[in-house]
Image (cartoon, rainbow, N blue to C red; front, side, top):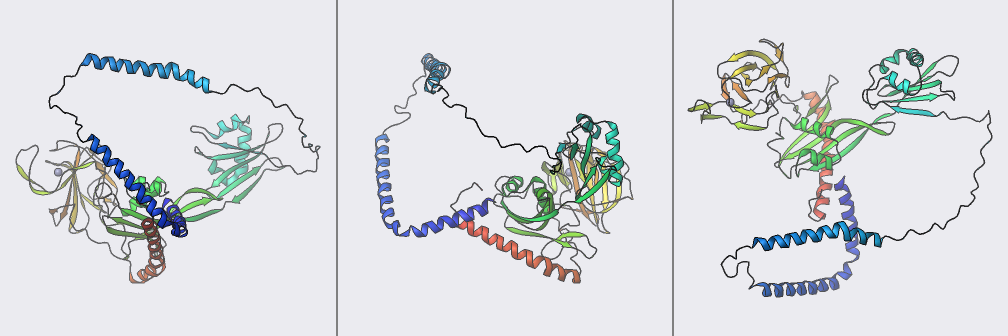
Length: 499
Ligand SMILES: [Zn+2]
């Protein structure tokens, strides 16, 4: 974390400053003297140049092209000569002449090799093989000079762990233990994420031993400031792309990361990384996060609900996941906003536009804005391929101009929030591929961009108390402390933009 490093550097430099304070007076006067001198030179230079002008006489001298050509050709020739001829010659002249090797070979006493001793314990030399794309297990066996009979022995010995050997993936590792004659003495593989199986074939009977791997979660803390993009900020904070994706996913209901993100927005995240046998294995979950978007603060805390499942909640105990997605499509731009009167691009007359048009490439998936039941599914004049979802007794959403529907969906079917219900197109009255999206309350269209979405229900009282005490209180304290430390580091650090 650059911020932390900066904080440390800053602390060190401040310490040094304190020690050098007595010298500061003398240094200050010297500094001022240098400054004055520089200013004098600067002003003298400008006095001299004051009468210079780029167009002194006011009339433009005609450019003589033939002369220009000569100058250009001359320069080009000079560069060619320099780079192609003179410089290599010069460079080789500068190179030191090869010095004759002066060292002679000295006899080196080699450590005595221990005589072969049957009683000495030998360490098994396992060969580690990483699966390449397109490789099968039999390919790997063949490459080691082993046959199908060996593979069959391994599969037989593996017992119920053999399922792990079906459908191997690139990057997986297998260890082979080969005898001096090339026969297969042992085979090691991952039985699952957290255990490794070792098969020994060098005894009288094949044996299989399962070793549990050391899986642990390690908490990480990251703080980022948006300069160009969320992913760049996350990368700078030491997060991998998958974790940045999780962060964006958490706040997508409150922040439109395409439209709302601003330079200077920031985030602080506490999350888990999964370590296996002390090596980072993958990313875990976000434990707590805070996002400042245009000076507005959003929070998310992970909480284990009464049913044992985890969910993310804002500080006031309401689910982060809202009843509705603000935008049901991954769009490129808003081509038309909600208005009571606009000039229709095709009809050429004023007409209300009671939805928002999200332009996106044809075929982009369209998601159900919330859980609900399909109420309309088919062709509708003007709307083209059209879907309406009823979410509650009062709220419905509508989706127009689809290129195609999702096969098998029909009126009366339940859909979940985020489920794909069709694909962007330009059927009906449309000049280009886009989703026409409507949010309807009691059948009347409301502006989807500004309509107040119903707030999700907070946690029930008993769980709320536990959430506040066990999650918010300790994690908020950590986030606050982190923010304070970062602010302190930033206040002390010189203003630069390399973080
Ligand atoms: Zn529209």
